[in-house]
Image 1 (cartoon, rainbow, N blue to C red):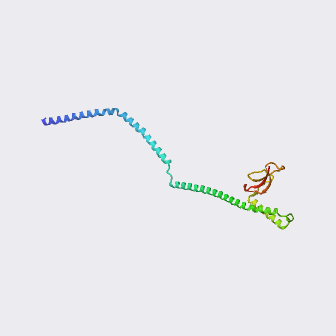
Image 2: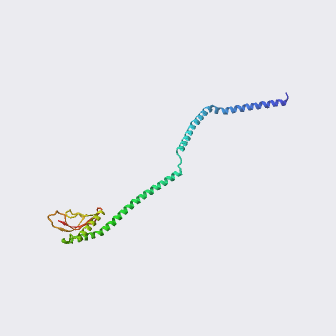
Image 3: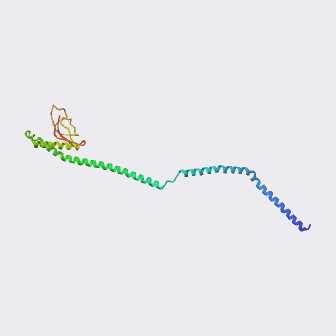
Length: 217
């Protein structure tokens, strides 16, 4: 064998030894990982298995929530807004109608009271005229005609809600009567109306004119 062949064989032997030594070193470095490897791997796999269902459950909840929580249609919101506006306007119109009717009724009563107050002096003069007719002229056509007109006048006032206040023989009531004189009369009780000087009238249970009366002490 020549010297060159020996050199080649020695170089190859040294390379093989170096490779074996490097393989042994690599083995020693990886062995600690391999000792704890299977347990750590199993734990990692368990963690993955445990975390995965949680993620799946959360995803399912979100999907269900998104399924039940349906987005509101803008057209429905507009319809609700218009319905609410119409209901408000109807309520306002109803309040306006009631208020107008009340004001109308109040104005009508005020106008009626004013007209009745102007008519009552005419009724008083009618009564004075009838009372001044002599006894021998009461059966004449003129007197009978005046009597019929007066009765018709009274009937019209009653139909309109105007009533005469009763006074003579009644207990004095300051809400209905106006005492202008006091008289001594033993036949009457105390604070009783003895005589009526001017008739009083009410319109729809409201006094238009108080009765002018004499009251017994």
